[in-house]
Image 1 (cartoon, helix red, strand yellow):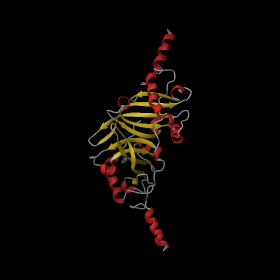
Image 2 (spheres, one colour; image 1 turned 135 degrees about the horizontal axis):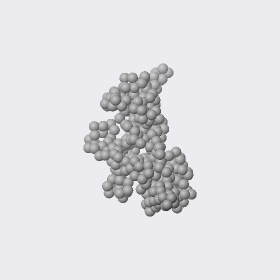
Image 3 (cartoon, rainbow over the protein chains, first blue to last red; image 1 turned 180 degrees about the horizontal axis):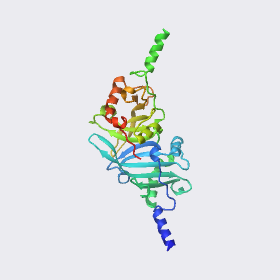
Image 4 (cartoon, rainbow over the protein chains, first blue to last red; image 1 turned 60 degrees about the horizontal axis):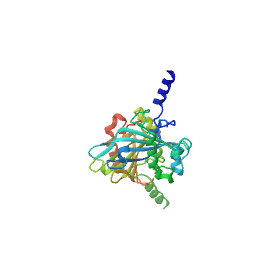
Amino acid sequence: MRRILLATLLLIAAPAWGEVPIAYPHGYREWTHVKTMHVKLGHPLHSTFGGIHHVYANKKAVEGLKRGKFPNGATFVLDLLEPREDAFATSEGPRKLVAVMHKDPKKYAATGGWGFDAFRADSRKERLVTKHSAQACFDCHAAQKKNDYVFSGFRN
Amino acid sequence: MRRILLATLLLIAAPAWGEVPIAYPHGYREWTHVKTMHVKLGHPLHSTFGGIHHVYANKKAVEGLKRGKFPNGATFVLDLLEPREDAFATSEGPRKLVAVMHKDPKKYAATGGWGFDAFRADSRKERLVTKHSAQACFDCHAAQKKNDYVFSGFRN
């Protein structure tokens, strides 16, 4: 009985797609802001990333952006917010999701050394990425192989 | 002759509106990103701040955002970029200006303890704010007196 209970708890606690969960990126709002984009209806990524997104980089990811090659531990966050459209301005509405891209060449060898996950809205626990969709993340990022699979560039 | 030359150089080096220049905020791109807004044609601030702006806060300004009161040295940057409109997305174009709001209760006693200045595009030297327009900055921020003259709030 105990064993069954333990197995059940592990199933709830672990991400749906494997044994290597990416930790919630605590404190990312004070990491370095890399860039912002507003993805609108009709964009091929709208169903996944429609809205205003900010990309944040931790110190190792900033180092990578400057060198063009990312060290173990480099982490990016894509912070996706609903757009709030007023008459003559667009501002930030509620959070839709927090997507994370984390470099660990051993754990994520099959996907260019990067792991992908996402958390729903303001939840620190509710994960949105399955093994299948993590592969889809990588398939899109694969186009950026020459840039170590990263789309963003840093502008001073 | 030397004296005239020196006076001329000082006139070029000093800001147009007074003896208390605000330093260019070197490194602000790695300060904390507070929020983003896209100001469009028709907005009352469009002629001044039309485009995508990101607000950045230095450590003292982040402290102030959390406490609701800003210490001496707190500095905000409004980084204004041209919007680049594609079919289904808005992204960041060239920089229009870097506006700075810097707390120094002694130097800027007449404007709530905050000094205001701005630098054209990517220039670290070409200032855009006159004594008259610094007063206009403050007149607008005066509406936020209860929040120590700051519009932005920080969202984790």
